[in-house]
Image (tube, rainbow, N blue to C red; front, side):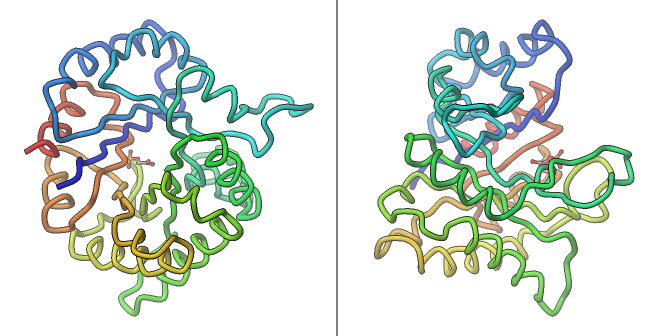
Length: 263
Ligand code: PGA
């Protein structure tokens, strides 16, 4: 049985490195006990270098995004090569909070409005540089008829178009239904839905990957994961891991999720 992958996406939290250390330290201390789990934390890029020193061998680090060029005149962006140089082994790409287009969302925040084309270029360079990519896909709303699957398919096809087959061994897909993410989520997804979505995602991946690889491709669930629902998504849903937002900022809760995945 392959290890479960538990990823903490800290987003733009916490507000200081002192606070980041307090979240990381208990996780780094205990993570080594969980042999069946790979743990990745994606902090704000600002903290990566210092966190690398404290993360120990068990906790791996990832970026939350990167540019599609390694270097150049791109003010304010993050180089994928720079991420790797700071010790990140992973990068999250295509998160819904970066994809979201249009006017400011109801919380007043302006999102990054990333296009599928940009995500595709980012996926290509990150994989080429040897980073593992956690590619997020997810629909804005759910419908019983399953037309939301078209959204997932479209995002996957566009993100993976032209990516060399050999690089896709380092691809992880995270299904994050946008309607189930965050404190203002409209609803919660079910393990039954996830099981179905995972099969669908692997079916789409099959067109891109080398023969036989898609059925091994890790597919994570993300969207309001906590210690109460983690087990059902892993067991009944068959998730290969979890992408955890808010709960990854509370070390006790994140460790609980890791220990559930380990069991
Ligand atoms: P959440 O966030 O766990 O706080 O819902 C998940 C994510 O956006 O990756």
